[in-house]
Length: 235
Ligand code: G3P
Ligand code: MG
Image 1 (cartoon, helix red, strand yellow):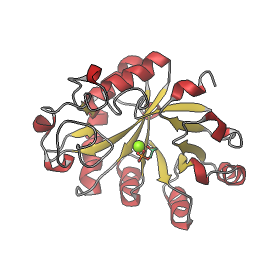
Image 2 (tube, rainbow, N blue to C red):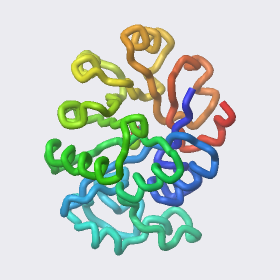
Image 3 (cartoon, rainbow, N blue to C red):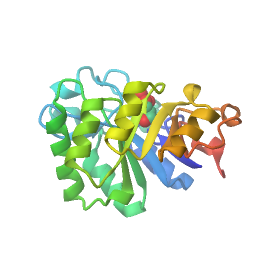
């Protein structure tokens, strides 16, 4: 089973920042998951919420701000004073970390007001500019239209279809785009479901598992996302 650092090592570091990613590398993880969003001026940055209020000293929507404005805020001090000065992480910087440290990435794409096509185009440019190969990443999203666009525009890259629980629409999408994995909330994962998805050729990745005792009946999962990956090592 692969242990994926969720937003880096979000339990002990400010989520989705360079500090959090470097902590995952230090821990010896091969994979991290992060959330990717477009800025107003067409840059891709790493942040979970559509607003920066919770995880920075600023306020406002990511897609209403230019990158330069976002770079003026502190994304570390909200978590702990010792992370003061942590800037917003750009996708470009993260891809360089992946190249340098041989770190594999699950990029979860999030959009609010941007259209899926333009975000796929931005992502494609970044992946090409940093010479990212398909074995380095899995692209995922809860947004079905975005998944379809990723399938169309980045056909060589692996796709994870995100869902809370599996329903007919999600299952149809897995097949439609030839997804690599179904990324499902662990509460809705069970042995039978995992077995069925495996039989159909899909991996099953589950979020966000922070308590190892939740896994006792889920040993057949291919990967789990955890804010506390150290609790699961060595797996
Ligand atoms: O990609 C797994 C997980 O991160 C999905 O939910 O809201 O934590 O980004 P969320
Ligand atoms: Mg996520």
